[in-house]
Length: 225
Image (cartoon, rainbow, N blue to C red):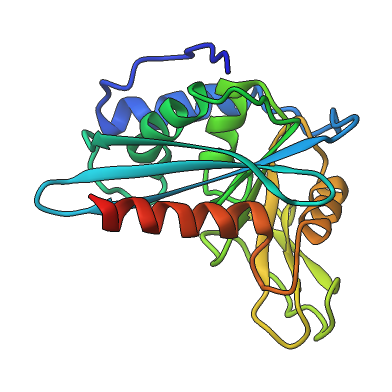
């Protein structure tokens, strides 16, 4: 899969923040998703001593959600752990795995935030811009914003709003009476479409299959190393 580099990864935290502010203006919040034949999920695990990143990308057929390809990357972490800047710690390994793909996904789902981020530029935005692909952030926990609790049924959701009361994402119940997930635009998709595809990718679990399978894959990868 072809990837166009947007900047160096040899950055200070201050430089990384400036890049976030600059690139955030390039995020497209309109739906560019057409026919979806393949959807990719991406996730990463880390280890200490030494600090290593275990990144995995799983491509599934859509709408069947059968795994058709997996790729991995194991790299040494070079950027420190700083909340709000995790994209600069995790993206190099994730992009390395994406670059190995033979099957190009039509839609990408990242286990992390998109616009639901203090500077409106989470890891799903970072990956979406580098891949130039429709990308959804689907996180298991809230990083930023406020919301009401959604209803108890699958498909219930409430807006996630930022400091200016602007909608930055959605809190989506993917399974009856379970904790919701936090869905936000990464790139080239609108929020209603991101919610719709997230729910369409759920198969009986709280976590959508693309990121659930990616989580399983990187867990196996980490244990194997």
